[in-house]
Length: 319
Image (tube, rainbow, N blue to C red):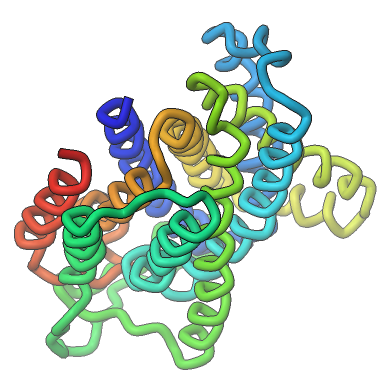
């Protein structure tokens, strides 16, 4: 089952990377609040259909009341507060710059998995965890300063992002850096704790990850739905830019698949195995960002080294 959990974790982190680059594009003309509402309210009915198709919807009696409480709490924390802080971080810093801060959730998860869930972490696993943690960070260390970015065109409402000189370093202003680090730190704590809550809810579920994800999404949607009565909320949603709306929907589908595989992974494998593998997501994030957001992100040519280190660490953890 550990091997299956690793496969789910890899599929999850791949989907998360697609989500992050889509969020980056959506946030160019949209807001974090818009992204949260679109992703949760559109994602819940889709996940309901997936749970129906996989027949897990018919196994609601297999989960205890305590499991439902853990999953609902994880959904509200992760999909509302966690996702909002994630969107603010990515919007302020960009998907690539935000990754080293967000990935600190890995340390929170591993630490609490050992203390709270009594998961055993062997010496070889610690070595593998270190490699997986260091691998993505290779992408961000030792950046060389380059010439200032040359803007060819400025974005307008719904227009594409500015075209800049290839290889240029796009640095956010100081206010955005402060905003990104503040929300990124909050996000790391939330994203670090919620996997443990999910694992606690699904530890004896016999692989009911899809049902668990549906419970979590439904709890978050139940909190959001009453707020649609607030005029300011309806106005904000009605004002979603068409381009941002498309990217937010792309992010919704990607994160839906990511969360489904994430819950499946945690339903069959320990947090100390799932989370290190998912930290390798930066390896997927960089090439995707280059393909989709190369005009608004900065890049470091260390992909092959990062991939080798992360894959080596993942193999050490699971073998």
